[in-house]
Length: 151
Image 1 (spheres, rainbow, N blue to C red):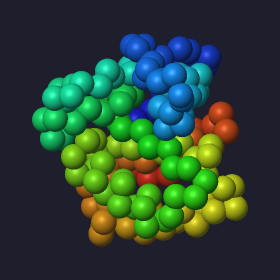
Image 2: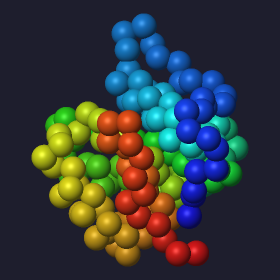
Image 3: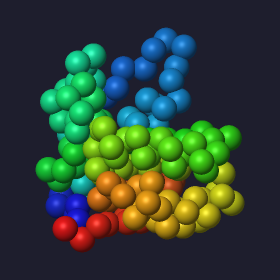
Image 4: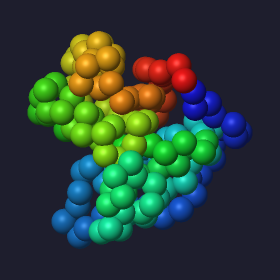
């Protein structure tokens, strides 16, 4: 289980994801997640993305986003209209190829649908999400551990 180890109000290490001139909501939320995790006492290193992988992915050509307290995590930020099925499929793919631990930034996801989403994801940890080891949720400026697989 990944636990914060630093004083509150920290800053992430590494390089922020580069946002293209026309913007990229997902990368913006990824950078936001790094800031929030650091503020909430987590030691976080932002990993650079490379075409042939950054060396931390489950699959060699994948590039997970963060190292948090020594553990590899990938970040995902569904938008307001992403279906529950698409979120589940995306997380299944990420935990199979990128990282077994996920940071899920829900700041664009409808507040009224969040509890149902989290409940559904946790119910899939022995099915579609059988490789998920840990799920950290970001809502606003808060971080919550929604799931942790005992190792």
